Image (cartoon, rainbow, N blue to C red; front, side, top):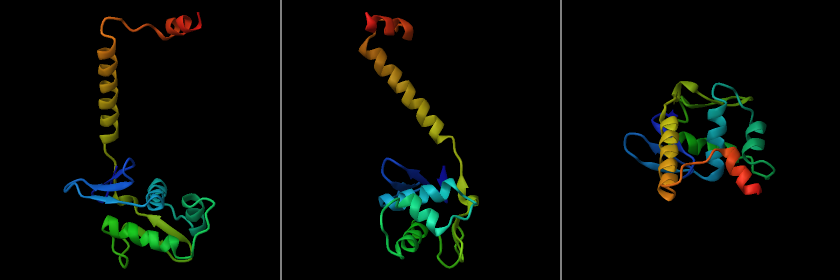
Length: 143
């Protein structure tokens, strides 16, 4: 999934620009906030919902959420005045504009590569032994 030419990288808690490779690391709560906004794209999320979802049982100041929103807008190349990507809905909350989300098959491709690597690694460890069916392995373990 791409957000205005940025890919979310959960292993780094960062945004990675697809064209330049630039990495923008986000704080833990900023990353969770972005994931929350994106997963509810198009929906207006209240301030209370976001604070409870992102910061859970932590006490946060009144400026924590607006400051985090500002940082995310800056990271995504959004303008605080125009608010094209993350919009403030006065007296209601915030909404992530789903028009800025592009879904890709990168995740599926990465998972396929990972599965193939794991199979090759397993075959390298035990090349001469054919893999036993799961039921047989369980029976051997129990004996």
